Length: 349
Image (cartoon, rainbow, N blue to C red; front, top):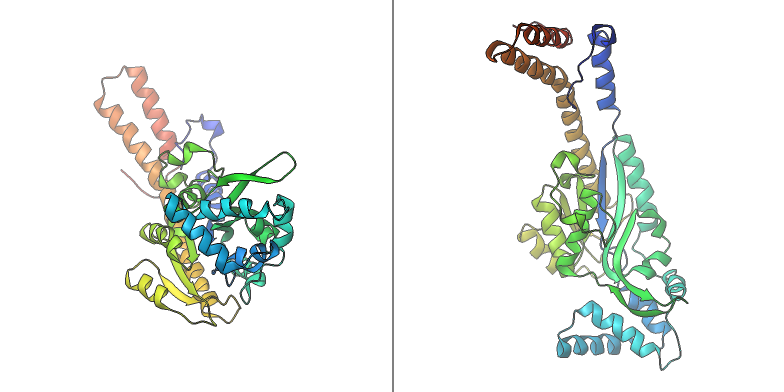
């Protein structure tokens, strides 16, 4: 609550009206939560490049990934930078300029796990009933422009992923952003602080909990692989929730078992986003938990209204009693204290 402004007698509302106005202001606030997703093998069954982009350029996926792996090893390159560079190199002999519009078109064909397309509306609807506003974010090592072309791109407040720098005519020339491992965590901080632009260095500034756009304990991260571990660990360590998913058809659980054993995830489940799935059930539990905590927090804020007024009154009284003041100053302090005292419910000394 902001510091109480000093008012003259004819400006002071009856205390019950003032308290009700302040209480309504607190209760009307709708808390936000964020769900952050990796994309490849989290929302989609494989690397997006494998399904669509690499075959469209006449390349075999296995050969392409082997080439990029060797390129990264021999040149001490980041794996993402290696495949982004290799796409440009391999497309030129084929006389296929890879443009933003081309990526968007190819992205339309990215397959998704069961239930993904309706997941967002169902989650939003459930959270709305609990008084929670949900925002969805992508934090992926995959290609941003491909995700932007997918059928679910419109569901996300932001898509943080690897991307290219484009020439004036829209042709990819150079990697502009490579998202991988620990540098994924910067986007958790951006979402929490509400500092969304990739170039904005204020993300490194300290921010008090009460000023966060979305507090960390109301952030969920869903991922599947080693590149997600830093985000999973960060979110869980700050009181949020991390969920590890695995392909329900392959049923390979080594990664999620290890992540759970290492206390890096809160839950694990098949990457099935349908309304009867374990994943949907766990997400409802998380929303219920956040909503319950928000109810408690709201009640505590309401209880704090007269408490803060009492603290101001007590401090004024103490200053009036102990400070060397002129008679007029003492009268002024007494008058102000009397006004504030009249706003405090119940009996106090």
